[in-house]
Image 1 (spheres, rainbow, N blue to C red):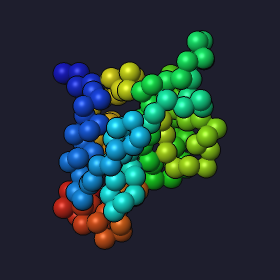
Image 2: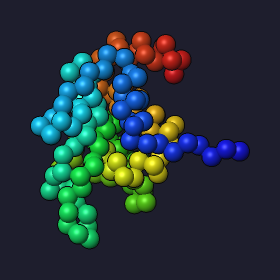
Image 3: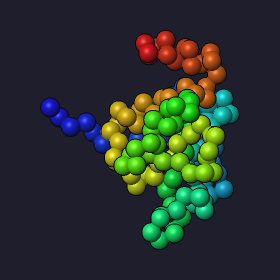
Image 4: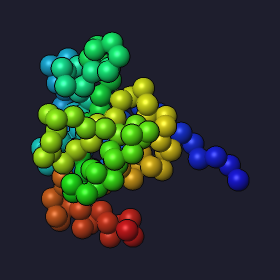
Length: 138
């Protein structure tokens, strides 16, 4: 049986843009922010003091923030310390998870696709989400 294809950073962009009604804004450092109905569902974060390498103290330059549908979804992703998903105190109470671009290859393309689709569904209007689910038989 073939091993599933590993995810790449390019896949984050492609999967986000494949969802309907998506627009892209750009942050202060030209970092992409994917939105549906003016609500962000994925954004490439600039280096911040809350996400740092525990050994060097250097800020991570490659953090991607992805919305999740619920706190239980968030916990399911971040509770395994070996998982590439994480959170910081800055995101306590925020329905999102973080992943470093440098670790995205630890996910399969299918795993990433599911998380991106869930992110879009969590932020799209009820009408858009219902239509997309029906069209995709999910």
